[in-house]
Image 1 (cartoon, one colour):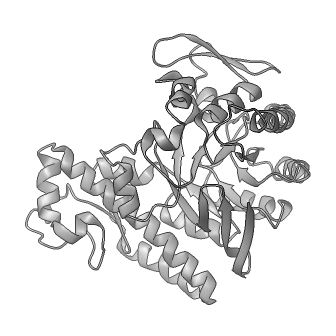
Image 2 (spheres, rainbow, N blue to C red):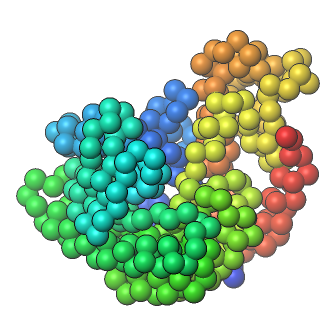
Length: 380
């Protein structure tokens, strides 16, 4: 397993990340399959057709429904969903800490909370998260961390980050043990650590320097896109990335809009994930080179054009805006499916264009054109 930078311009870089399940070309967008599927009736055959490189699945949701031990018996997450490429599983931390209204209790050992499905009491800490992810046999496991509110005060953020550091060391120890077990499905499972600290630059930088010493296979920036402004997010990326290892991929968790991604690539980020393509697609909002459009608008009733000219996604190759709008207004699942497929294709194709620009040495011009084009046609 290795990370090789092909070319860079400023902080922007394009690399090849070799994993046990294949090589990932970066920058890359990870399609979010929370429970092993993309919301919107999109399956893994569809994902192959639109050239998806890596699938992201949710540790917490797979643990509480079907169960990670059952998925292990079925051959692990890749076999379970019929996917032969890399899979990243998040730690469940974000979901656990978003359940603060249902009896959540944080201790040094971990977090006690109630399942959102049946109210059952569940305990999850670093060791439990690593064990669940080991059972799922994902390519990349994420460390269990506390995800504090981005705008929280120093007195809350500082001890939270210190706890996250202690938890990370426990994750490192446990995943090494699990990778050595005879019954482990993926004995080369990688671990990414997560940088936290809200929008406090000094805490973020100190934490980045601390976790960089662990020489993990990758590093993530968590706790952003949760209430702060875009400018605050970019400022944190600016100070964190230079303090992470240069020879490891950087993952910005839960981000974001096309412009967010372009700006973050310019600041040295490799990996992205976000629910926007599927969530917006299910509501008829589709992305194009010239901004997002709302197919529910009346002006598309007689529009025979595809969602986007020269787009090679399944929706644009075969159907018109008018027909897809008709499906959406009729509440036909096919309308949502076509919109989601288009959006996922758009995001994946955007990353192809970004990678090509960096590797060919014309990133700055491409970045400016991409952003200007998006802003020029954005609808409400």
